[in-house]
Image 1 (cartoon, one colour):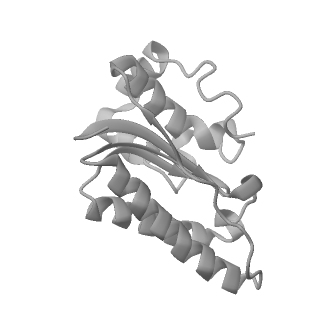
Image 2 (cartoon, helix red, strand yellow):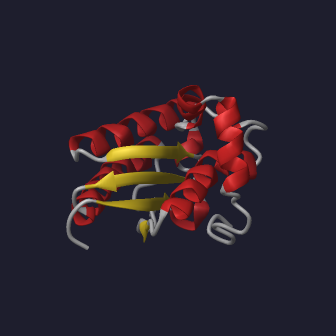
Length: 166
């Protein structure tokens, strides 16, 4: 697809191993590097979440192919660094990212809820705003609790993403 569009991108560590989450510092550094990469691409990031073994992005990008290429370079750099830190040269760290075109407003808001709910879904926290490696806290600050609840009820996650993170 050519031209600006909204996408849900996700990438997982190979076999969902907790490579990103080997330490809180690694998660923090990766989150910063991911957001920096997207900023350099002039992507508009609507939601993001980094977990110990995968991440999700809801973003508007000028060209998807440029984002995929830049994420590939980020994955290559992090694989090399982490394999050195973990003394596991040759380990496969990343699976290829997956992208889904956002089709309409309902899909956009359900994706927003899915991404912000992901740390709760996986049992890392009980409330969205308690997860430090994502956009949920700033989303709640921006829209307020009542509007966030309205969006949650109006655009439920239901079976969205079922089986993706298994």
